[in-house]
Amino acid sequence: MAINKNSNAYIIIYTVVMVVIVGALLAFLATSLKDKQAANVLNEKKVSIMKAFGSAEENFDDVVTMGRIVDGAFVEVNKEDKAAVDAMFADLADLKGLTASENEFPIFKYEKDGVTKYVAPMAGKGLWGDIWGYVSLNVVDQKVQISGIVMDHAGETPGLGAEIATEIWQKKFEGKVLYNAEGEFAVRMQKGGAQNDHQVDAITGGTKTCDGVNAMLANSIGKYKSFLDTLTAAVAEDTTSEEQAQEPVAEDVNVEPTKVEEE
Image (tube, rainbow, N blue to C red; front, side):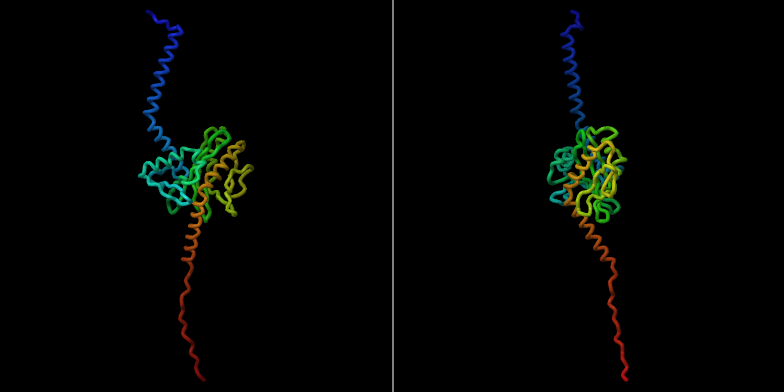
């Protein structure tokens, strides 16, 4: 019996069979590629962290120490402890968790040529959706400065808010001092142009995204303030010790008493 390919029954059966076959194929591919997809996501995070450090050419696993800030102190995470490492990167994938966390904040440490930098993750909201990134911090002249930053977004407007993900705008943050003389967090994207060493030019037409970046910086870095305070205090102490060590020490001079001739 010939099959009527123009009948409704044939069309329905053909559609159902194709949907089942294609769905099964996609499910198989998704399952078989799951590990590779997870590895790619993990590698992307590591590359972003190294870019924030300014050392994208180096291998994350070779040069970075992983840790958490617990009650204001750096606690190293053993790289051999897979569960602890997985938990670290799971935190980085949880934007809401990063925003709401109150303790045990993930942080990454990098040392080279006598300079120590720390990268902290950030998460916030832009105009149309999530924004996130990594900021590299180090102490210069007893001040905490931004040494590098990487930002990305879920759906900011191309040519406007989406510019936060471009290198030209991210470089504007380098060297900016986190806190003003009163100890208040002062780094922000400023409409009308930067006027001091805390401010960065805002993106014309991207006001809401810039506001989101400002809030993200203040909220995310604010979680690390007690730890950053200990860093500046340690640098101040080292500087004082070096200055004292360089001060000349007065030598005891034995002076012979002057003999007075009797008349």
